[in-house]
Each structure stands twice: as structure tokens, then as C-alpha cells.
Image 1 (cartoon, helix red, strand yellow):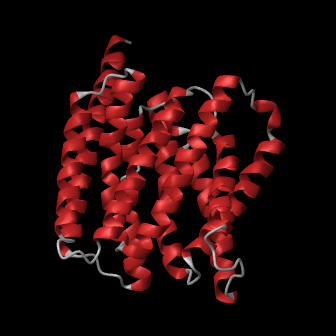
Image 2 (cartoon, helix red, strand yellow; image 1 turned 135 degrees about the vertical axis):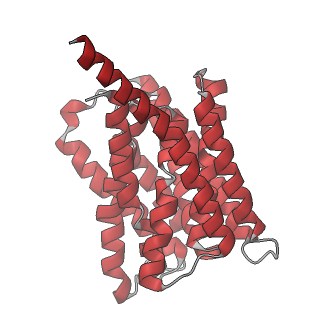
Length: 292
């Protein structure tokens, strides 16, 4: 299988699973810091168990250890700001604001990794920024501004995480999720009023921490092994479409008109990024068939 296709399928699969994240956060009534403590701890335990089972396939070096810690730190910041943003603004706003991640990732890749960013990717990123501006225009009254700014910080840390993992390519960075979850739990431990969970939240926390988050990020973390950081960031925008959809269907949380318009612009950006690739791949296959 082509590496780009493999990276795209792994990332898209992970994003599809992760799209349930916002809904589960909405369903959990516990204090955000209690949620973060258990989310991080369960993630570490789950991924740690998998890594112990497959310890023979991981060969850490000094460089990988340092990059792994960087990835863990950015993941921790991304997770904390994501959960807080979901509580302070609408799910649609949070997820669409994450469309800034590809732009930040492109800039970091260009200047840190010296990777060339294609004109098509830059065009897609500019469209994402247009969608982002539409979302922010709906917060001019200040009601969601704090949550929107927190979401923007989440986008920056997400982009930095992907760039660090790209720098470690082709190494598997899944083990970095273990210290990442512990960082989240440790920080939340000093903020949470208690660690006790309401009875009705236990099932949702278990699904979130033992299934959705570990599976999603185990898949998404593979993406930068085969794709550039901006491309992974653009695929993450699929969550922007699916996340609000689940919340709308289950909780009837209606996105505002600016959020809908911004979402359509971001979808156009994804189409701009992926359609020429599929078309070129089809052309290559036809040419090979003719040569045969």
C-alpha cells in the first residue's frame, strides 16, 4: 500500500473515532479537572499495557526519548485546552477553530523541519483560516471568546505535536502517549476539587479513557510517519464535521450560522487538498496500464 494512502487511512480512522470525544465530554457532568485526571490516567494505563505487550517492537534512542517527551508535553497542553474549551464555548466553535492547526503546522514544518509545503496545501490552509474567521465573528459579543481563544491554543499545541512526531519519522511514537497521559493527570490532580466521579459518569469516562482516546491517538500518531504535519492537520479537520454532528443528534446542540458557514469553508479546503492527489494517482495508474 502507498505510504501516503496508508497515512491518510490511519489518520482518518483515528479522527473518526476521536469525533466522539466532544460528545462524551458533554455527557460527563463532573468537574473538568476530574474528567482530565481520569482521562489521562486511563489513557496511560491502556497505552502502557499495549506497549508492554509489544515492547520488542520499540527501540528507543536518546533522540527519540527527547522527541517523545516533547510530543507528550504538547499532547498534554492540547488535551487540557480542548476539554476546557468544550466547556467554555460550543463544540462547533472549538472544532472549527482547530482548523488553524494546519497553518501553524505548515509554518513549523517549513522553518523547523525545512519541509516544502505545496501550493495546494497553502490554498487549503487559507480556506481554513477563512472558516476560522467566520467562527470568531460569531463571538464578537464576548460570550464565547475565552473558549475560542483556548481552542486556538489547543490548535497550536496540536500542530507542534504533529511536527515533533514528523521529526521522529519513521519511528513509532505511540509510547509517548504514556507520559502524556500522566502529565495530564498530574496537572489535573492539583486542580481537581476531588477525584470521586458521579455514578452516572463512570461508564462515559471508561468509554472515553479506555477506548475512544487510546484507539484514536494510537492511529493518529501513525499519521506523521507517512504524511507531513500540515497534511495530518488537514485530515484532523474531519472531526470538525463529525464532532458537532454527534452532539447535535444526541444533545440537540445547534451550531450557530457562522459555525455552519465556517464548516462548509473548511470542507472545501479538505476537498481542495485531497482531490488533485486522487486525480494524479488515477492518472498514474492509467498510464501504467497503457504501458503494460
